[in-house]
Each structure stands twice: as structure tokens, then as C-alpha cells.
Length: 134
Image (cartoon, rainbow, N blue to C red; front, side):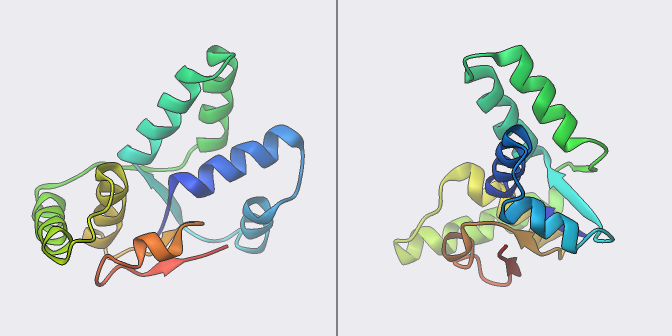
């Protein structure tokens, strides 16, 4: 299963809004059979973005439509352990990652799933996480 990062989902939503086949929609077309999911944290970030939009109800509907039937991965106790270890290592190195991004990355890492993102360099700092670009 491939976990989708917020950057991918935002691009997919924007491309859908503009009826434009950009990189996110092209990736989806080329990977139709891929098993995809989003973490609870990605869904939360998307809903915050919708709530802050000039037309929040319309944007929320768009977010929910694009999310469709994607499974939502809920954090586990194992993910919390993964998060603690990765966060501590990054802080010790002086290269911390924003909390939500770290939660997203560690959810994929704990599930042994790759993460599809436009922000590869950022997530590649999480040791052991397979990061995919589009």
C-alpha cells in the first residue's frame, strides 16, 4: 500500500479543480492498480485547508470527493514508538521535521509503506522510509 502525502493530495485536488492533467493526476492514471491510502494526519491537514478556504463548504466537499474511498490509516501504538525514535534522532542531529510531516512519515514507516510526495528531500531525512516522487 502506498501512503499519499498532503502535497500529493493538494496537487490532485487543485488539478481536479482546474480540470488539468498535471503530475498528480498523471501519476494516478499511470498507477491505476496501486493500492493507496492516506493517514489520518493527511486527512486532517486537508480538512483544515478546506476550513480556511474562501468557500469552506464547497472545498470540504471537493476534499471528500478526491479522498473518495481511500482507506484512512489510523495511528497505532507501534507508530508512536516509531515517531518517538525518529523525532529524537532528528532533534539530536539538529534537523527536526514539522510535527505533522513527521507524523505522516512515521505512519508510513510503521506500516512499512512508501510515501508518495512532492517533498522528497524533506521526508528522505526519515531513515528507513521509502519515499516516492511524482
